[in-house]
Each structure stands twice: as C-alpha cells, then as structure tokens.
Length: 278
Image (cartoon, rainbow, N blue to C red; front, side):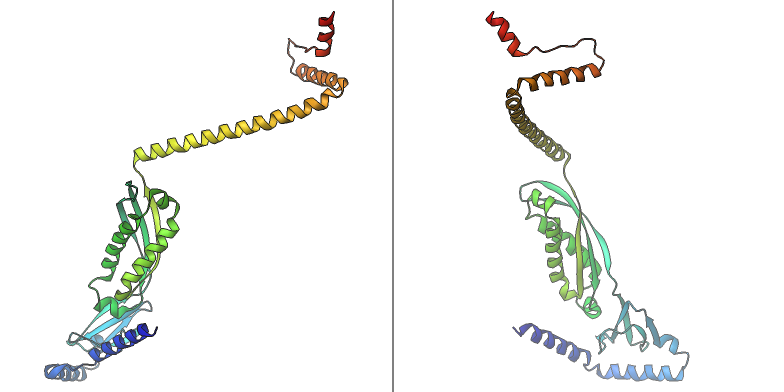
C-alpha cells in the first residue's frame, strides 16, 4: 500500500542526487571564469544574468547540461550564469486542441469519422522537459491514437448514445499515459460523429418506419377507446327514446348552422319497425 509513495520519494531523491552531482574540474574552472566576468562587468552583466518569467510560466535551468537543483524557477525574477546555464520556459496554462477527424471502424463494422477536443495542462515543468522531447506534440499524437483505440471497441449505437462515457474513458487513458511527462489531461469531449451518406439514409428510413408504425398503433388505440365510449353512450341513450330524439335535433341544429342546401334527416328505427309490421 505504501509502495507508490516510496517509489515517488526514491525518484525525487535520485533526481536531487543527479542535480547536485559533481560538474568536474573543467566545470569549476568555467564557473569561476563566469563569476569573474560577471563581477568585472557589473552592473552591465545584470542584463544577461537576470531573467523574468510570468505567473503562468516556469523556467527549467540546465547548468553544463545538468538540471539545476531546486526544480523549475519562477514565477518572477531569477538569475542564470552566462556561458554555463541554459533555460527553457514552460507554459502552465490549460491548452485545448482539436483532434483531427479519425476514420474509425466500429465493432459492428461501420466506418465513422469522429473528432474530439482535448484540454490539458503541464503540472510538472521539469518532467515535461526532461522526460519527453515535445510534450505538446506527443500529447496530440497520443490523443488521436487513443480516440481510435477506444472507439474501435464500441458499437455504432454506443458511440452515438454514450458520448459522456467515451469521453471519461479517453480522459482516464490519456491522463495515465501522460503522467510520466508531467502533463495532466483535464477534459476530453467528443465533438461530432459523421456517418456515411448511405448509412444516414438507411437510419432515416428505419426511423421513419418506426414512427409510422407507432402512429398506426396510437391511432388504433384511439379507435378502440372511441368505440368503447360510443358503446357506453349508445347504452345510455337506449334507455330513453326521448334522448335519441334530442340527439337528432342537435344534429339538425349543427347541420343547419353550416348553411347547407341539403339536409339528410335520419328516421328513428322504431318508426321503421312499425311500418314494416304493417
């Protein structure tokens, strides 16, 4: 359980031992000459010795090719020794970039083009310089590869409906891979999923057929409920012949309101029965 902290502390100790290593006789001679030149050219030498980095920047200093003890410098003012020290500025702000559209073959053998956005920042300036040649370029290439690898294990339906899950999976994979580089991946978002035109037409036809079938089912259910209501109304009206006559009069009133020239008047069924008996 304590193996991870022990590895981290041992790595830090090794880095401190490397930083404070012996620079050799030639290094000490060059160091003495540089200090001598700084002293005799003072205060003009301050123009070469004093450097400033912004609040969001850090400076990683190398002295004769060896990392200077104390880690990255900044923000603010720091000093270097000309002819001995070289430094690199590292931006610690969050960087966002678009992953180029990747042609991915899904698990159900469908080719889709997917692009994403990745947000990351450098959390350890020293590791981003000493452990990788170009952390920005390496992170961009790794993001494109991770996008293809993750989407290659998903079906088309999962890619279209589980974007948030895919984004979290990509973020965890990228963050784990870029941790030795001192890079922290903060967020990954899948922007767009582009399907082939033929597949779009097939999916549109399928969706249209599904909606049409659902509309027919809803219409049939409405007819069923309406027929039940009509049956209940007929049972109520059949209990009173006067109610049926009132319903006829209401129908005539409705027809006459529309100014029709022809009016069809339904005869009561009981009246027809009396004529048939005669």
